[in-house]
Length: 91
Image 1 (cartoon, rainbow, N blue to C red):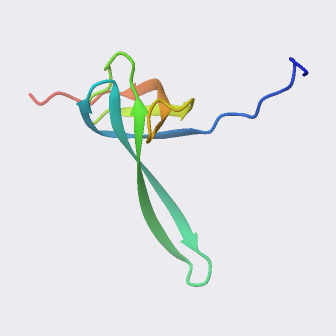
Image 2: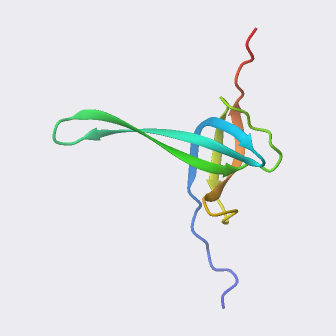
């Protein structure tokens, strides 16, 4: 077997944390827009991902980047790479 075989690139996403109540797991919502070709109307769609957060750093409202990884559980196959923007605390 060739040890230098190139692996495919991992898919990455960016979204907003909507739940951080589980241990080492956050739920991230990713919003997408697309144009319906026939009617030329913009459609919005969202999808929720369960993402692994090893140190429980991400909180609800944070914007995070995450990538594909090995399966951590039945539904969790993503891990956080970077926390872009922390939610601002209420004054």
